[in-house]
Amino acid sequence: MNSELLQQVRVLDPVSGTDQLADVLITDGIIRAVETEISEIPADTAVRDCQGLILAPGLVDLYSHSGEPGFEERETWLSLLEAAATGGFTRLAVLPDTLPPLDNPAGLAALNQKLNQIRQKLNTLEEAEKIAPPQLSCWGALTLGVEGQQMTELAELAFSGVVGFADGHPVSNLALIRRSLEYLQPLGKPVALWASDHKLAGDGVAREGVQSIRFGLPGNPGIAESAALAALLEVIAAIGTPVHLMRISTCRGVQLIEEAKAKGLPVTASTTWMHLLFNTEDLGNYDPNFRLEPPLGNPVDQAELIRGVREGIIDAISIDHTPYTYEEKTVPFAEAPSGVIGLELALPLLWHSLVETGDWSALELWQRLSTNPAICLQETPAAIAPEESAELVLFNPQATWKVERHTLKSLSANTPCLGQQLTGRVVKTWCPMKKKRVGSSK
Image (cartoon, rainbow, N blue to C red):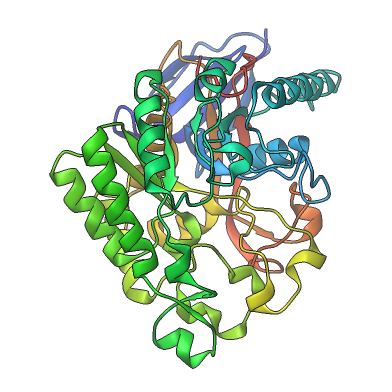
């Protein structure tokens, strides 16, 4: 029997809405007791003094990228899972734009086989080092080759266990989106779409505005998102299939979603952690790690996104972890591939910027990083209660650490935080030991 007692830890549980000091007893991966004080302690229980620490449900990432297969030098499945666990994530959903793309049942079967090998490798570790990897789900490609031209065999992918359908790229063909939503409606799986008009965006690499002009960077207008989003919402209203709207990045985007929800449209939405923390004023040093797609918003966009997330217009915060090698990212800003890593960085930076400042409560942040993303994936959120599985993260908001290549589990280090001293770090992550088929929520 493996038992541990966390004494006087601050317990955050968005499911029950509680924020309290308590003792928590965990035995064999199950929460056995949550009480003000636990006096009867089983023999051989490891006791940890947790004053100043936070215990909360594991984080859930709606969409991120893997390097493997195809770009193992960026990230492998093993390094991705280790980075996720280190950052406090117990579930993550990976987009299908690997090489080859995950657009057929054979690719998913190969991934399941690979994950089984990883589990076997982890099980060979010494007991003190043994970890249960986060539960990995995969979005099935909506279109063949994630090219936005032809639908995949949606039913076959659904029965293969994908968590839902998303290309991770904009699909500009509205007729194809309409047909896809019609086909997907009876399958009951989440659908995630990214609204962006690439013709309007052109070669823009920064959100159009005062800063893009001042820094001499080609502008990507906000209407590239809002025009595509307005059209997409019209299709959703006509078909009625629920849709998750990815990567919302503009003030007008938030307003359109607010209007759509007020009309009862079946939509949820997310933005990324980077779009909440940074804006175009941060582009002055031309750091290619600020090169994102969609680009960082202007200050008014950032402010509206923060409001939207806090008020529930934007349901969840995604990580959109996108690894690249040093050579790929160390190029001029306009030539850099878009994306940054974030699984190990998002929690401490969001905590520092939103909770420590008093702008958000701790429960509000955790709901957007854990409970709501699970609901968007049509999964049951983790809770902290007796007889629940221990799907938990222990977080020290005062711990300091330096972001360096050797302190990151990810194989890539494409982040503007590299070399910085951060405050806040995950102490331990409990992932359920139950093996889970890729894409399955059961």
